[in-house]
Length: 407
Image (tube, rainbow, N blue to C red; front, side, top):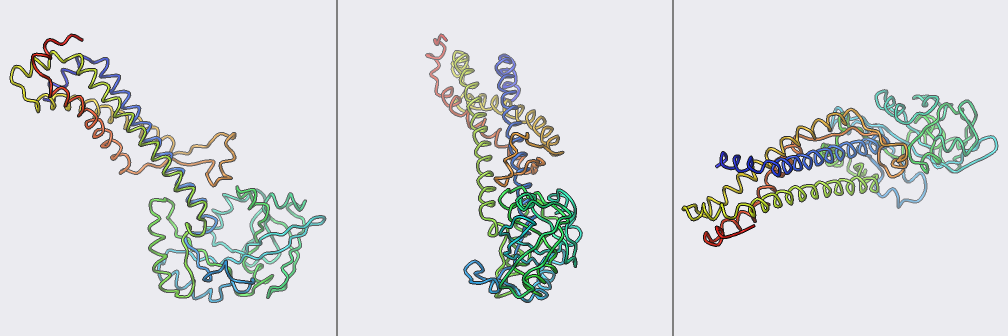
């Protein structure tokens, strides 16, 4: 049957080749679309978790509590020990957020001061992604401060200038002078205009000795959104260990960005679905036109004793050959394109506002083996299913009427 299908396709090789290459183009586009989706999802996931960790340990109902002191964690050592006990590879980083007034020589502004001392791997990554000038405060540094670049412009200060922070009503010294040692570009203009970084020790000295607002938990090696179940599993185990404290995943900490990632994921899957429909329509068109041109031939075959099932298998075999050939050619082209894009793709500068919406300016295409195989198999299956209608029409032909048909 396959041999006969091949001969029939070769007789109409012009239309057959056009359909094969059109199907190949659709498969290639689907794979590129899925590769872009994977790259964007992973890059957005990494951007979110790079700033806040994969998990966060917080005081329960922190947002509903009144006063700065009520939202502070006290047993930082116990929390850190629990994190390591649950996952020895995890890194626990205490963070203290302090609402403060920052004053330059001529201007002042209300900001959020973040006190954090990242371990070397995390600190190096953070600096590589966000440090625009100078350096970050190191652990134990109680004199240096890094400002968001937009905040520095607002205060009219630069690296080397002095800044005074006021944090009245806190348990620390409440006010201190710092030297600007670094400028940060955080991607979000609003965040960048209201954020400053101190070492954890400096922030605790300023406002809350020995305490933190939250403990960020980083899971080394967790860089793909598809592996996020690891964070979910750790969240449950860590919550059971800590009891009163609340453990949140990055999705709960950043619901707007998590929602954007989900929406983008669904939108790109919908686009892939439209491509599948297009592939099916092309196969229907080819099979139907082939049926119209061969009605007399099918009438003769049926009159010689061919059963309706035989006629249907002839058409379905032709569709299977077309779709399989097109899917394999498209897979080769699509995988090659994704391989090139996996080295890094940067959106044009004209789309520089993407980072405002939480989307990365540069991403690395990523395609799983399952997605590649599923694309090829679905294309073949949809193509064969799409040819069922023409096959049924051919199987129901009356031999006498078919042989009299004049196209």
